[in-house]
Structure formats: structure tokens, C-alpha cells
Length: 261
Length: 119
Image (tube, rainbow over the protein chains, first blue to last red):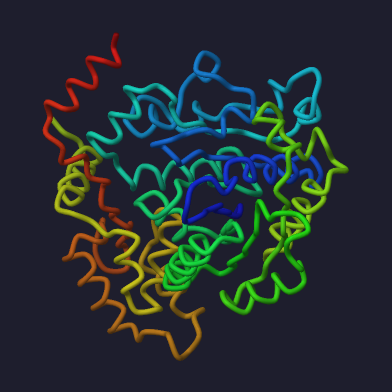
């Protein structure tokens, strides 16, 4: 059975979608795994941008599936078949990587908010994707904070990666998520620090502090940097800039996920 | 005339309308039941023999006796947290997740928003 890896942060703006896209790409490209990425951030979707999709090229979405308009398989966009001819994403050509995007159309987002949806159908879709696409890994990009789809994704995960910034608000929020994950028996709880101001922290000390506070392994400390901001979601950064410090640290996180039994 | 499959589907839908379990409810279950519910979420459904086999694989301290398991399954079914098809050894169980409820904002607000988004 393929593994489900949920990527979560208690607060927004931690770089969750960017990290998810990069981890998925590394897992498909470097490790040669069959990988799916689901955008369950239905209220504020965004990960499709990193894979080069826009409203016109998107086709069917998770929203169509949730309202019974199509099978989940029809929503899976084959990134490997539509890779760019240049840039970092070009390396994904022929790789087994699928994206299940959420709709970016205002009316479809408002429908989810207005009517709700069948959470059981969402779970069935996720499990069906794993079997239909024979996935080794299904990455779930969640909505920040806690809501139905986030809690469901935590409950069904083999591994949960929580992203936090070195910020007091993030520290407190992460404690809440860690408690909930533990109460739901998540087998592998992993942490990642993103947007750490360079030269401000002693990384060894920060790692010790965080691991002591949450009793979970810190898999990487990724620096805040202008190069990533300049990328502006135009490409998958770790593919476009493999030797960058951010990319090297991200690959450590990917390795920790691949090591999960 | 509705076939057996249609009748079973209708029965499942009726049960689902009655409520369902949330992920937070899962956290409040005893460890053995929580593990079984999580396994059922991953496999989508489990037969009674599969449930018994999963229970056997759990640490002895958490394991439920066959009688306690039967009682727990009945209780979860009665709360509409599980859907059960068939009886006894032939029963198949499925988790009934509570649907995400819609907004409680006045409908006029939504129709006004829809109107604006349509333009």
C-alpha cells in the first residue's frame, strides 16, 4: 500500500505548498517513485501554479470529483506528460508524478464554503488514487490550521510533516497540531523549519530545542532567502537550483520521508 | 424496480444522512478501536474476519476480546459512525465520515456573491 504524507502548518505563509511541490518532485525524480500530490486546500488552492497550471489548462478538479461530476482518476493531471521544455520542471518529463488540483474558480470555491461536501468521498478518492495510479507516495497539501479535510488527512497519514517558522506564534500553533496528531496515532511525525533568517540561529541549538519541545525529529532547517522569493512560484526551485542551500536542505527532508517505514 | 445493490446503496445513504464520525471523534475512541477505524479509512472497508485479524495483531494490552469487539462494533453502528452491510461473519464495515457542513451565513449573501462572480 502506498504511503500518505500530509504536509501541514498551523499558520499560513510557512511555504507549505512550495515545500510539498519540491518534496513531490524530488521523490519522483531522484528516488524514481510514483507520486501523487493532492491540493486539499480547497478554500485557497495554489500548488497548481508551481506545476505550471493555470485556470485554463487545469481541466477537471478535485471540486468536480467531490460533487460527483467525475471519477477521481479523471482529475489526476500527469505532470510528467506535460513537463516544460526548459527550466527545472523539464526534468520531470516522463516521470510518474500526478497533481490533483483544486479549483481556482471563484464560484466553485464559494460552493464548497456554502454547501460543504462529503468528507467520506474525499477519503475514498484519496485511497482510490493510490490504488489506481499504483502510487508509492501520496502527498497531501493541506489548508493551514485545523478543519475537516486537514484532520482527515492527519488521521489517514503514514507520516505528517509539520512546517514551522522560528516564530513564537508558529511554536505555539505547532504544539496544538502535534497534540492532535499524537491523539490520532500518526505513526511518523516529522518537523521542518522554513524561512530561518540566515546567521541568526545556531542550527544545532535550534534543532535541539525544537526536538526537545515536540519530541519529534527536525528533518531540516531551510533558510529564508531572496532567490526563492525571486522564483515567485514560477518553477520548482530545488529542480531549477539543485546546488542552492535551500535545495540541499530540502533533500534532507525528502530523505527523511523516504526513510519512513 | 430497485435491485439489491440499489437498495443497499439507499440504505447506506440513509445511514449517512444521520450523522457520522469526525476525525476529532476518532481521537476520543479507545486505542484499539481508533486503530481499527484508521485501518478501515485506509482500506475503505473491512469484513468482520478482517477486523478480527487486525485485532489479533495489536499489542496484547490494547486488544479487545471478541465479545468486547462485537459490542464496540454494535455501538459504533448504532451511533452511525460505522455502516454495516450484512450480518455476523459475513458483515462488512465501513467508516461513515460526517459531511463537512455548509456555511450558516444567510443564503442572500451567497446568491449575491454568486451573482458577482458570474459577471
